[in-house]
Length: 172
View (spheres, rainbow, N blue to C red):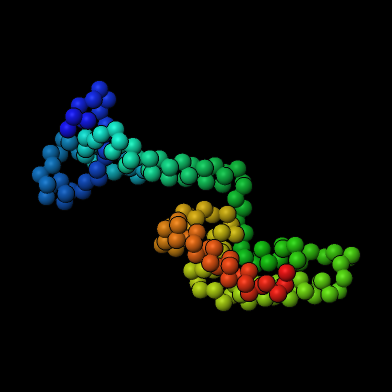
């Protein structure tokens, strides 16, 4: 308790519902509106040490900052939505280059056809991850869309890319 008796007082907002207020006999006057991350909720303020406060708040601040950066990029037009079909059509392998030889052109077409097959054979969740990845979504945003953690999305994405590289190794 000595740590709580410092000059500066720290409080962590704890979300409450009408059920928890009744169940724990929380005084209604102690309940106030507070932000937890980007969400405004009814909360009571729980006294905490400086260390506890920062341990609780830093991940919330980090997520808030990531969301702000993502929205700024969208506003600036840096994140252009692109479908996988459009990516297939716009790849460097599809450009017409009159200088290339027939064999190189044929190999590029075979590579694109094999890539189409490989992507079509992926599980639905893997196709979703790759499509969102191609549209410059963050791993956190992809994880929220598919119900996985950011770390899980990163690992799964690396496995997908390895699988595609292995499948297409003969075209290098």
